[in-house]
Image (cartoon, rainbow, N blue to C red; front, side):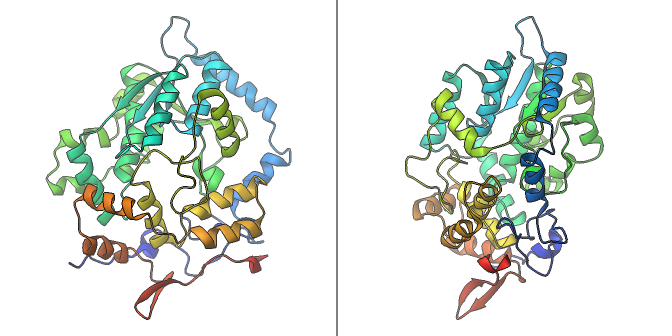
Length: 391
């Protein structure tokens, strides 16, 4: 079969000239990232502020306490909601809220497409550490169909998961009348994007500004999916949000965001465990994004569209945090970024989406950005990869 070619460069407004940050290893092909005149990305510049005393963390903790006190309830009901997969970052936030700041959090989990054994164990460990939890598990038949559609038409099989992950906590906050939602990091600020370093956004404003509605793929209705089937993948109404007055806060605004430190904290306090098989597909990391069996294909599609994958993202923030040097990061990226998912993961993905190998590779090739890939002697080759000469 032939799948229509998708112009990733035009779709994501990618620069024609590929450049790499001179501080970390991130590419200017990451959507919304910006580089300054010295060739340094805005994520690295943000880290400079965090570590050069340009942010008053004591003042920000006062802001945090004031926010928590404003929402604190004294009747035993939940006073904060934490969207949580059972991973190190969300559990870290929930644990501090409960045991350091004496809040009563409700954790809400949108189930992965398919749990890994270690992901399910860490999810249970979160509950065992003292947290009430609502697990929202979507209709598997619908979710699989959406995953296949998203894989082909959006170039990312994870979009249905992201929609459920974003919207289900909002619906639970409305249902339980919890106006305060706490997320971990503001991803655009921490890893490179166009967001401002702000403490929170008002959910009603975001819906009014169509920020959230951009996630909702109206065209999915053309595939015979009913309103009921798409309900959990769509945002709550503006009226319901306004009634509760939901604020979505970022923990990374109030305290230094250190993913590795979050991991050590959770190992010590919640019995969190890393990948028992060692590193994850496509990277050297052992403790992040462990819960979903099709996760490797989310990252591999990034390689097709943007010319970088999971190892680049992991190495970039570890360079910023001073955990590894840029030279070490370059070596790690070259060793792991192009790695194809394991044969067992590949087989499972084909079965999950009910597709053939030919279909899979036609979709993959349809998402390859022409300015990033070239075919030589019948094999695809990435035109640009990070090296040590950028410095």
